[in-house]
Length: 184
Image (cartoon, rainbow, N blue to C red):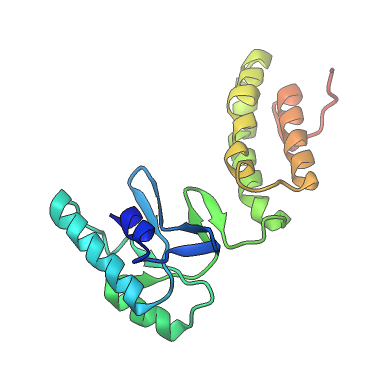
């Protein structure tokens, strides 16, 4: 219904260029609805959602629903949130494990990945695994941790070097923080 309204020109959505706009995005049970910050558009989208809820029997969780605005005044955000009866959020936010609203080239944004690496490569785990076990963990688990981030953001070279160092130290010594000479 949202796509049809966008195609008809009834809704604007979020315009990237004169020919490109996005109305909504869905993943599993999460939905993001993009809207032009106007009372008319938000009221129309609320109506479409109510029709959908009536037809499907589903409901929107007001507790899990948050309204974010880009270049929209706080007063407008408060009035828009009354339409959906939800909270007003601020940037940066995290969606599906990815921070949104931070500069993607900052090393600070990647600290979450570095912490996940350190947690996965705990010293006790390395000491309990054989070399082959550590090799499997590095190849199957550790190498895939940053891929979700890297599919959206370009990683700084310093972060790539740091993660590679953690992998190498864990593989050869069982501890990601203690340096040990690599045999290959």
